[in-house]
Structure formats: structure tokens, C-alpha cells
Length: 406
Image (cartoon, rainbow, N blue to C red; front, side, top):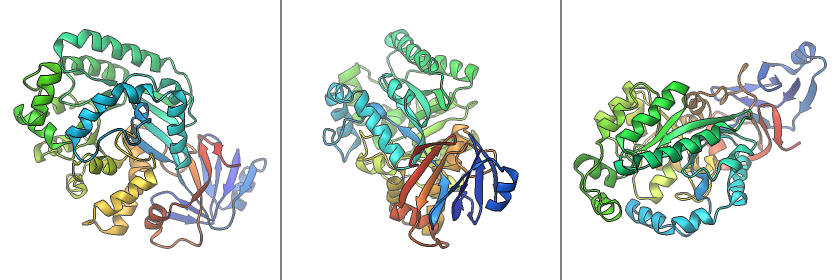
């Protein structure tokens, strides 16, 4: 048992003053330091410097580690231009990111306070780096393939990668499943994958309605995706529309990434089935997809969380940076209220969506904690300041163990 004594604790529901935390792997008790000393007389005491603040470790629900070699290779500004550049440079990017490259990306997330992340793994090349990382990892094995003739081979590859991830036996590592998108995965494959998801109660995610091109293709088998699929796959029509795609997930809560172009019927379906939308503001801007309407999601009581996406469509894997961009992107929302919601979206709400016992400084929760060095006593605008000023993170704890700092 250890006791850590900061000046402030951000829970993130409220700010506590002059309280200490007794913990091992989980948070056992939050109370004044003197009370904890009496309860746990043999515990090691860690007293922090003045104006120290403890907050929950951040949760990055959606990141592509395998594409971490990109910096200036891919084209930005339009989704289709970006997609063609991904295909053209795919081998270079995948081949150019070895284990050291991926570990560096994971380390950069840790340095920015990310103690849990959801890795969308297309090839399984990131398995070793994710398995050996100090963070909690949801390892989403991605299924892709819209051609029925290739279904068996693609599914066998998916199963092989999923089984490999299941062989990882360490605390905080969770095998999971990703369905790439409604335009890129044949319904036969989706049904087979979801049988496993439901039988084994695995976490599930999918890209959904990211661009106007996806909208046109799923609605009418038209638009720029028409040329794309005809040229590359000899495919002249979509394999399912959006409602058919969403229907697959009606009995299993799913994290749907982007949803920028989702219409009202789709949002109603997402709300009815208690799915979560993952918001990646920087990626949406760089690929020319517009901004998610967070107020519409909240009006429909849809849970949303913030994530970075991968370095294929971002310049860093930093949730404080992501939240800052979102703070300015959603200029029609009250600033203080939005700041609080953004922090909740990468802590408590993200943990709830992923089914993890973390994301809060609360008794019984995992001891995933950040120690931030504030410059002075915080005020009622603390949430805004945490996002804007990127205070130094002097210590990081994951499951009660120090992974940064002393």
C-alpha cells in the first residue's frame, strides 16, 4: 500500500483539495492524509510539491500504430486524395515503421499522459510493441475485405491475428475486434466476426460515415468511390448500405469512429443501441471531412469520446493537443462546458465505452493517475487551463506502478 498526497485531485467530476490517495493496483481510499496514515500505518508516503494536481490517466480510444512512419508522405485536404496516397505509399509506410518506430509512437503517447489506448491493427505488425508497452491496450484486430471471393482467405488471416493477440497474457492487454467500415467489409465477413465477438464478449469498433464520398457510395453506389472500387476491385456497387451495416451491431455496443456524415436516421439508430462515437477532430480537418456536430449527439443522448486517430492523419498522438483543437473547432459550444466534456471524453466516458475500470480518481478504480505541476492554485476554469497550457506531467502511474517519474 502507498499513499500519495497532492494539493488537488481532479476526479474529473469535481476538484478535491487537501485529500490524499491510498492505493496499490486500485485506489483503496481517498481521505485527508492524517486519516490515511492511521488506517495504513505501514504505507509508504509520497508527498508532492506545491500546486500538484492528480488527475486520471488519459484514454486514447482510436489510434493506428502501424502507420506511425508517416510525416510528410501522405496527402491532406481531401479524403480521396489521402486514400489514394495511402495505397500508393502503403508498402513504404508499413515497411518503414519497424518495432522501434511503433514503440516510439507508443512512448510519445505515454509522455503526453495516455495510460490506455485502443490500437486498430490492420496487419498485426504492432502486436509486439503493444504487448510490451506499459499502457493498458485494447488491441482491435481489424477485418477488411469487400469481395466475397476473397472472404475465406481474409477471414483466416483475421482469425490468425486475433488468435495471436489472445496469446498475450499480461495485465491490461485486451484482444478486441475492429470492422473496418461499411464500404470495405462484406456482410458475410461481418456476420462471422460478430459471432466470435458475441460468444467471447469482445470489445468492438468500426469506422463509420467519415466522408461525403462514403455517404454517396453507400446511398447510391456513386461518387468518387465508384471509380475507386471499379479500378481497384472491379466492384460496381456497394456491398451494403449504412442501415444494413448498423443493423449488424444492434445487439452489441460498438465504438463508431468519425460519424461526421451520419444522418438523423443513423444517429437515432446509434442512440437506440447505446453505441459510442469516437471523435477525431484533427484527422477530420486534415482529410477535409468537416466537423462532427457534438450538440446533435448530446441532444440524442449519444456518448462521444475524443481520440487522436493515427499518424497517417495526424501530426502527433497527444490528447491534450486533440482537445485543444476541439475546443476551437466547436466554437458554437460554451467554452467552459466543452472543456469539461472533453476531459470527461478521454477519461471517465472513454473508460465506460471500453468497459474498463479506470478513467476516474475514485475508490475502487484502477490507479491510473497523472501528476501535473500547476503554476498556482487552480480556479473554476481549471478544465480550460488543463487543455490550453499543457502543464508538465511529472509522474505517471498505471495500475499503481510508476511508469514515469520517481
